[in-house]
Image (tube, rainbow, N blue to C red; front, side, top):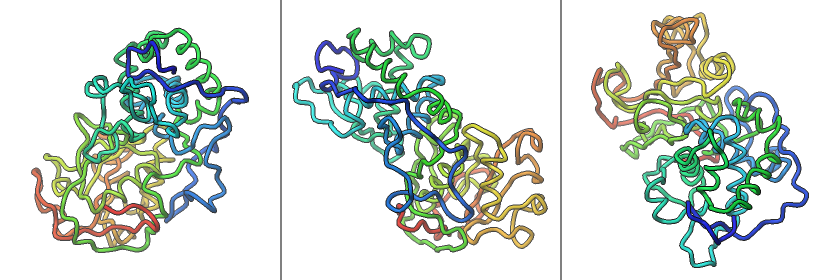
Length: 363
């Protein structure tokens, strides 16, 4: 956007050169994760930092999740990428020298941010300079402004300038095509987990601190109401699991369950794609097999050390739609109080077990 004539979230940054922008993407089908480890993130992974066309790979899952959250349809991820590009060159230029007051990754005016800001990453803050928060807020604002029914009106609300609408739509077409569609279909290809590191599933650590809860990122939540919390010590494991296997949470720490009350369990469903390629693959990598499904615990299931119980195919009211009337994958971490507050909430527990993430985030 330009910094003049704007009446929505921001008066955009100065124009960015557009020559040479090619059609985006060559995503591999399926997530590049193997048993016991996530896809490599960073140097040595053999993955470029940007996709063909210049879109940073780290943002693509965020565009997709934000679009899904606010119902922007198949064109949503490319529009969000285009606005992010035109506003701040994908966050590389957040300096606003016009004096307009617009700020952050997507250049929101403070009053618009106050109305539409989102804590998408669950860190307790609505931060316009946080890319997750800003991209989700942009998706929320576009939806409220008419998208996807009228992209013209929604983009015009973002910046009251016809040239801006034309630029965003043109760049979205450059970023779109088969590649962006494959992302929107949930095939995240070479995208990396935001918590980083490789999951060492066959190792476990007993953590006594911090004894607190932490809210799950909004982009990974599809349950009713606001995102729920998990024990802060399993939070990195939980985010890694959700991102690596393209899953979303329907229930975390809440009442009405046998094992959810202490924040060490999650119910999950696929974000998109098949149950076998997402939920079943996650269950199998954590040690579940169809033969042990009726039990879900050791010694019948040879679960990885940090996991206490997996509810999937074969366990009553758990599993994919062919096996359950309430389809979901349930995973419980080992803790000092497993199942200790059925039907209500309690905790935090004295200790929990986690699988380490080498070089990754800590609670």
